[in-house]
Length: 339
Ligand code: PHE
Image (cartoon, rainbow, N blue to C red; front, top):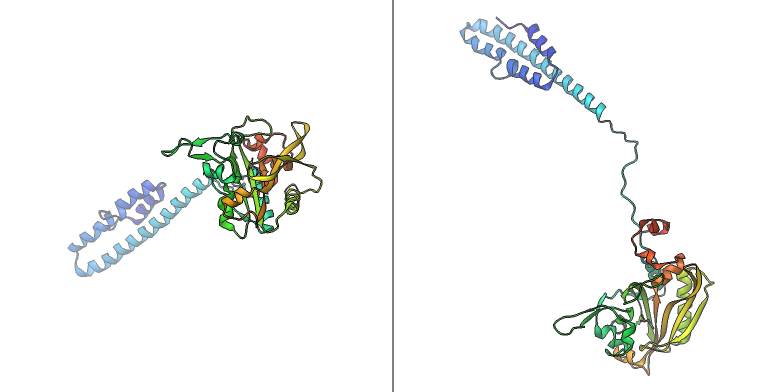
């Protein structure tokens, strides 16, 4: 006697969760299920009866199985419909974007300066922040105990050989001799980078600031080339023709003659002459240190106070704004997004 198909389908119809479906499956379609058990009972039937009974059981099984899969789909669909209603994803809402990075204005200007010099076929070198005493002082004609080292008071690093073996470079001139040797005879290079001094900090001084050194050496290099380069570079950096400059004689052991160049600018609300550039014709001793004959060759070196140039170019009243980490400051310069 076959179980009643309608009764079984009615049980299926009543299932509304995955768990109930599972139970139904075990009971009616699994290994131990009632319909399956029917096949076992067939062994008592005659071969003739077995054939028709087999077909009927198979049809019953297939009907229940088809209905089962249909019900399973229905329950799954209902489950997902419900879930999707709860977890609606609005693809038109703007995505969470990462905040945009900004270049520090010093880096921005450094890149401008590098471009400018690349146009004039200068090599670019960054040197290193920690240099030897020889590089920082002796190579550029400042004997280790010379009073001029005091102007460059800074942080020394000791090692086994000496209590003051290395120094955080106080100027980018520390790389002059090494780079003159490296690039000779194509001797035009710049060194942009940070330098370190023992300074009292105020609106226009910091213990760490940026310089750009530029050096040209060759035959017949004179003050005329010197002046021309200076004007071109300053006009290029400040993007203006109307910058008011003042040149004063100055002493640096590695140039002869040496000059200090000031620009007129507004600082802390007042008009002031700001020292922005140092320069001079390279001292014969420095040329000799680099293996060149000063009677045959000459050249000039400049040291630009980059941090102050940044202040001039962007009209900052206080250079500490550049390093105090206040993002609102950088965010007020849209060009700083050109990373
Ligand atoms: N290196 C000097 C300083 O930082 C500046 C300078 C550079 C002067 C090149 C002359 C020539 O004090």
